[in-house]
Amino acid sequence: MRAMVIKTFGGTEVFEQRDVPKPVPEPKQVLIRVFATSVNPLDYQTRRGDYAASVRLPAILGSDVSGVVEDVGGAVTDFKVGDEVYYTPQIFGGDGSYAEYHVADESIIARKPRNISHSEAASLSLTGGTAWEALVTRGRLQVGESILIHAGAGGVGSIAIQLAKAIGANVFATCSGQNADFVRSLGADYVIDYQSEDYVEVVRRETSRKGVDFIFDTIGGDTIERSPLAMSESGRLATIVDIPKPQSLLEHWGKNTTIHFVFTQQNRAKLDALRALIERGQIRPLVDSIIPIGQVAKAHARVEQGGVRGKVVLDVNTFS
Image (cartoon, rainbow, N blue to C red; front, top):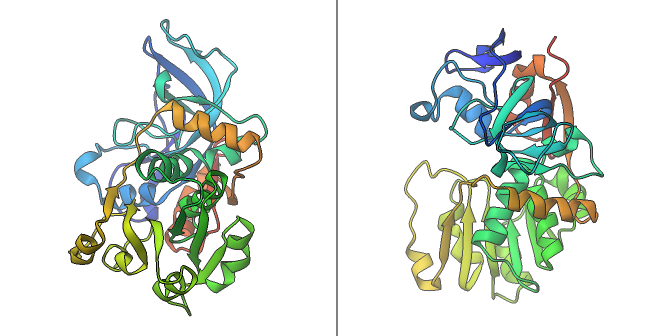
């Protein structure tokens, strides 16, 4: 099968197309013909060597799959050849999805929402699973609560806004001024232009100085340190980014904050729950652009430079 492989860590130039053996499913595994995948920050961070200790070279990257079941192991009971599925491969646990075929345990695979394309489904598995893990599994966001979502136009943030509204929360979201209308169209009740407004001041003003119940950090920087200033008593914070330098947690002590560091776990239940919301029209996929997988270097550069609305998807049918 054809795959985009890296033999060394580095810039976008390290990708090369190679023929590699087609995987064979073990008894509880499913072989998928990959139709589409996408580019996540995790992918370019892995490519440049941020997680070198956890990645064996040569490596096939890719953290989203949407495709069709090609074959099943002898002990598989939940899927059959021809089923349309989507999922996130086991992160750092084997090959990724920048290839024509991928094999995975049936426990992490879910049926693709019927009302969306493979390209749209490939934009959702990691971002949607991450948003679900942060807001529902860990944060336990409830109807009537308030939440501040940073980077509302990004891959995870854009899904988190829709998920929070489906739950029944009051949503504040930050973004650039040029993305304000887009973020508002996702359902955000308050859109904060981080280029001209201080999110702490806006939140405090609009909540009568009470603060929000929950903050979802997708950007890093000094967000953890500043969050208590915009948070209610006994509020919650979930972050999905690394902390590159020490930050003070003293203000959190005074607010009795609960902090969740989220690295999403692969499982079918989250994707099934997301599928139900998608099929009801409460969450819609957000595809910035679709690029042939043979131009994966271009796609990585596009995401790495920032300013993407939703996800950059890779069409796995077009290697050349």
